[in-house]
Image (cartoon, rainbow, N blue to C red):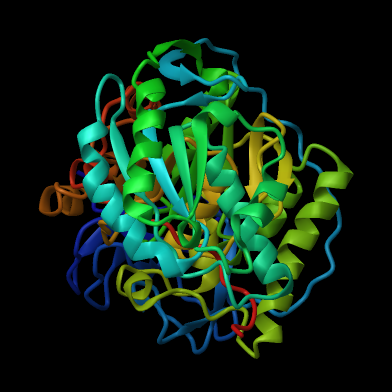
Length: 494
């Protein structure tokens, strides 16, 4: 197993792949050795040369910040001696790079083809409240409705949330759009929309956002209009279940897959193992005609020009500039610092600045050109790599991916998390220690890339694994019965 890695030939730091001790002599290459001046925890960085004060620290071939004081060769580089180099709003210039050429390939999975041509990777019945006031009713209905699971129905799930009333403007619009997106989602073979009756986002309002939908797989219930809302709901679910149970998986081209990509609880290995693995997967799926969605805009700050210059045309470039600057304005409008993003867990894992995290995060995008840029709650329209406006929060961003059409979310982590989203949420560990310790959370170990595993080979194994998940293999959060949903709250509460 390697002890360290120098990611890019331009870097003036290396990353520890294991805990290193002061005094160790580390061989970086045949010509280069470094004697460590301090202990270096796994995932953290150390200097490969003397670096003067206010000089760039380079990782992934790009600056991740500037030194606060002189740093000696072999010294630990982290938050104590490194600060961000990022500012506020920037002016960007479109400098397109040569489009990556991806070798076409064929792949299939077993999915549920819906009447509108969309394909689900699950056949579940969803209970979607229009307002938080009926969350407990939805939970009771979920519990009592389990008796209707039969045939190909895999689960009956209530997705609770606290919104749907006392909202205004765009904040209220976001809630309505996301609820409508989930009602139309192909992973649901049947949907019960459960309203109260007096809420702002009542059922009649939600129907305005649905557009064309398969009326045979959606039922609506206004609780205030029913004498016994639970019994009435159970009868509606029985009707939905009778139809959904007849659905069968069939062979479908992988070009029908839409996969969301997200990371959280990162460590210093995330940008070296798990995120590049997801990036290689993204390129592979896109080569098969499929679609991937990259989100968490604040974690693009500092690496945004890489994505901007991969935009397929100038219109997409302009949309990406707005994507970035609109989120910066969102931060400043709430009197918050734009670039103070890495969480305590990120920092403990070796991530020092937002540039450090962002350059690692964007590894998930692979090399394919950007074909689409989506606003929050907007569904995918174009195959290939899409960028989605959503925050870094794990539950909010993963729900946003599902709302935009993702049938599966790939979630990389160096710290571990048990959460789920409305769709199967695959947890990919950046280090093998986490995969071993939290085997009840982690679905796939990318930490083997620090040992003898090769990215090209592991990518193929991972691609096969995701096709298995798309064909019905349950991920750990599903086995544990976890199902989460969180809507982006942006406005005042009345």
